[in-house]
Amino acid sequence: MCGIVGYVGRKQAAPVLIDGLYRLEYRGYDSVGIAVMDGKQIEIVRKVGRVKEIEPARGTFGCIGIGHTRWATHGGVTEQNAHPHRHKNIVLVHNGIVENAFSLREECSAKGESFCSETDSEVIAHLIADAYRGDLLKAVFEACRRLVGSYALAVLCTDEPDTIVCARMKSPLIVGRAKEGLVVASDIPAVAEEGAQLYSLSDGEFCVLKGEELTFFDTTLGEIEKDAIDFDLSDDLPDRKGYHHYMRKEIDEIPKVLSLSQAKITENSCFSSFYRVLCQTEYIQIVACGTAYHSGLCAKEAIERICRIPVDVFVASEYRYCDPIIPKGTLLIAVSQSGETADTLAAVRLAKERGAYIAAVTNVTYSSLTRLARTVLYTRAGREIAVAATKSFNAQLITLYSVCCALAEIRGKTAPPVGGLAAMAESTIVTGEQVRSWTPHFVGASSAYFIGRGADRYAAMEGSLKLKEISYLPSEGYAAGELKHGTLALIEKGTPVVAVITRRDIAEKTMSAVHEAYARGASVFLVTCFEEFCRSPEIVSSVVIPECPPEYSPILSVIPLQMLAYYVSVACGHDPDKPRNLAKSVTVE
Ligand code: AGP
Image (spheres, rainbow, N blue to C red):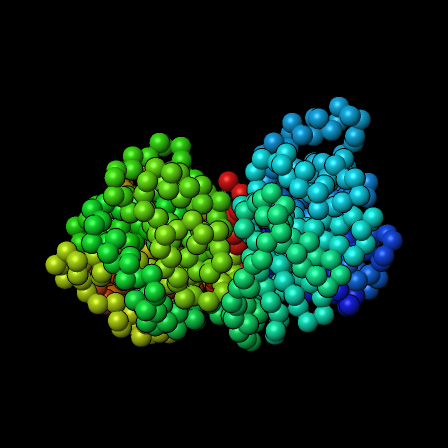
């Protein structure tokens, strides 16, 4: 987590760093800082809070500098813990986790060195300063050999006033040539501009940005050449396009994302060789976190019901610790919007070691996940800025449903076509606006419940995650039939309960749970394809969505739930794009 940025060139560095940090704020936003060197001295400005807190530092003089926006791991949210960190002539920013920080700190302390922060990152500055013998690259290299864990580093040294040294291990790092200087950042948007040449570092690689030269080094400090990566400026430069928040804009993009993703999936050059893998597939494991985990659950429902192929879905953070059984021929699909989620990557590494075929469903072309996978199925959601995932979930679903269709074809089964879902999503967004009128029932409630059966329960789980994530209202997504086995005890007068009903054969069963909740005083809301249930006197308000094949229904039913979470968050006075304590990509385990 955290975003880092750096610049050396002809322009003043501070404005470049601050503008870059705004574009990385989605990665963490509890504290922020920059360090700018004027040829001799390094001035460091750090603040608790968002990037705007360092706006007054825009005028800091100097053409070389580094910056950081933080999501706290080691140490609280304080100015001392904010980056950049300094020790002697070394100043650095770090994204990642140093797992052996404690023992390294003890070692430094034993030598009489003292620390100014509680972070794991500060120890890296000590290691580099201790190793410095007039060559910053070598000192960074020596220090990195001591580190266990993950890092993306940008390092300044007062003795080398025109140089930034960068290093990467398991945390993303982009470097490049821009029009008027050299740049480094955790992600493309921070440094993307017309005509820029950008490069993605691989694990163990180093890069020196010096004057006007960019030099790459491999894991043994041998000089290497790298190919520039493609990026799409229209996608990579964030723009709210008149919306108050990215989240609302991203929900409105769902129909476009669905048509694009569906059109592109089989065009993917990987797909024909992947098709051959699917021909051999008898068992699938899916690993993912959060929203992506929910899309895995939805995929399981579709693939098992339609193709009759067993699918197990794992929360990635648990996968490594359950000593997973990975039979020969297992297809493991890792789902991750960012492709950088540390838990998902760790699960993938284990499965790979144990012989699984790895396919990735991801939204980010040059992510770490794409390097680990043998097949990459890109979702075409475009850049998602809001921390709460919306359009990327729908894009993951259409991609996984397309895999389901391919599997069905191979198995001689009939899968309903996925075409048409984009148009249905369009009308769902229009009717979904009605959820705005539901917000007074949620604002101030002590908890909320989302229920459903079959695939509807996965939409319910995702709706619940969205609500708690951005409105801070305790919430649970539940199998409707489980309500009576415990959770019903929590229902009291006015407790909001949202039922999702999209499968005709089990609709009445979910309505039984609605009756039970209503009888205990719940205010029940409905998202359904079936108008007749909306007329039930027990329902406060409902949204009718188009009827699609029930195996695919979460792709539509989730939309009003995403909108509900958004409107409740706004009504509560929160920033739905930047929920407290969270960040967009979780690059720590
Ligand atoms: C969703 O709204 C969350 N912000 C979060 O659960 C997210 O889906 C999860 O961290 C996984 O991220 P990934 O898809 O980038 O791997």
